[in-house]
Image (tube, each protein chain N blue to C red):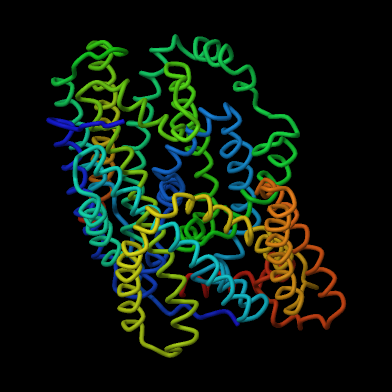
Length: 512
Length: 80
């Protein structure tokens, strides 16, 4: 499925790749300290936070994965956005973000470390950091493949181009540059993506024509819920696993998402930014799911292993010369905005939660700023070296997703109890987290061994979340409660109801 | 327990001007690309050009709006 970008389209893509680092480089002027680098000096307004969150969230893999999923399973893919993400975003904005922001932390593991103990922080940093490095390798590999397939640039050079483009502004400009490049790219992503969807709908006779054609091929494809015995998306799994656990865990615990709200200029901006992200998120299925259905209506012959190429098929066959450049730029925008955010967040995690805690505890501000920049560059280089592993293990992306499902349920459980139940204590947090991960790992490998394939990751998320909740509760009740002084500012009832504490924390967080 | 935040600088991010320039240039490029649109099996030339012009217009208009807003916000600062 070769797509050759030439002429004006090639020029648009090259101009885009040159303009993005120049744009990001402009924001280097705002970086004077580690707080500027990691939290954009806490000066991000709500609209930048909202757009940046969505830019970070939508990757090139989402375009291919969601379109491929729609081609394979149908309209139910929209649950990832509508039933999964949007309620979880609102939950995160109202129930979690205020606590993170007021605590004045740099990372989610740092918050958990304060609430429970440093071991929880270390384990969370390793789990999320490892997952991010894993994803970065995948992103670089995807970028190399895209530039090779569409523009004829050799794979290694494609990855190096991406590394230079992202590295230039991420290393120097930190979170401010990352957030602003996310904002500038999201408009390109939406305009390009909508252009493709509108043209596609014109070709299939509008929405009713699309529904008619798809239903004629697969009667269940336009159903929002699939039967209970569906191997991948059974409806109880979607409701319990995706809606109640996997999505809230992603939107409430993921450093790459939460970091933008920690850089907000006020608590109001932090909450409003997260809430605002739900608005563009509502339209994401139009960019990702609908093109998959359009591909199915126009070309139902894609084989099972090639269904993830539904989106490239639409680009190749629908877009006339002169439009391909814009849509490919949108595709690149999705990729770059995910790479820069993941690199920046991984560097923040390792600098703040490992370097500052275990290597140099009392370094100067300038020292940590330098370390943050070195870490960012190091993660980019590391990801390039990891990327070729994807060639030998094509299932790595799936492995990454599975890895996430093993620990995000227990993470959400201890975070929820940590904020909303003051009786949850250090022992409960540690045992609950480890116990939850043990349950999810046992379920995954146990069912794999017994049934020949693991159960849906949505069920794994749900049961590991429940296990985390139950174990944390039981162990906390059986052990000594934490003194109230240790919980000030971190737990419901010890922050929102006490005006004095609330004011002090707000002042501290603002740096007044 | 709560880490002290010691930075006393109160900087403000002023990104509208540069955002406006980026989107305006991108919109103009998409307009120019409309001149090169060719028909294919599924999409006619007219459909392609219309889509390009619509996409270019969105980028250009938002670009101009951002430039205008960015400039408007700078004026009080200069007066001070």
